[in-house]
Image (tube, rainbow, N blue to C red; front, side, top):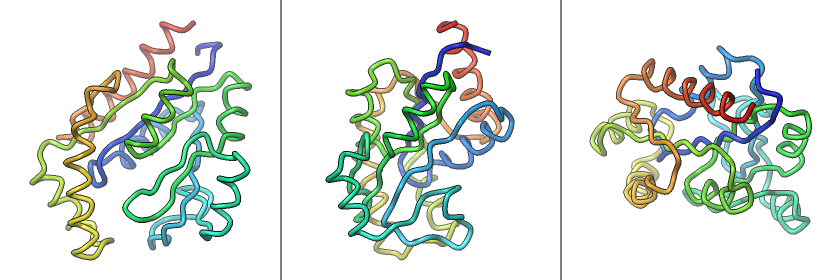
Length: 190
């Protein structure tokens, strides 16, 4: 294991399988640390407060943002989402590898503040497959699906700004590739 901590920023258009990938990477590599984001979005039935997100109201989020508590925050699909500075700094001070699950605009902001962060863009095999995945999970309205698909088109335009691009056509392959990236980065930093 490396003796230096670093950030691994994982981003993707909504529905690309990012959550499935990083959860499995974390399960298989318990020494990695996950930075839980804050959001004003309503909790989905399968989500757990404090594991998936910290679900907070808009007033609390606005206060935290005004107090500089976030490394980055953005409006994502009409809701606010942010990465807490204190969590990330604690992780790095403990020399851990910290996984961040952020949207594309948040990832770009983090890259400005942490230029040595490992950035991974999870790409869907196609927009058609992305739409199938969004519809299959049955967590968004038709209007929300259309917003996410429109946003995905815009987000895909930024993929080449990331150090690594992993196409999630088969989940097991994408998981293995992300693990290989982290292992390679650990070796390069030790």
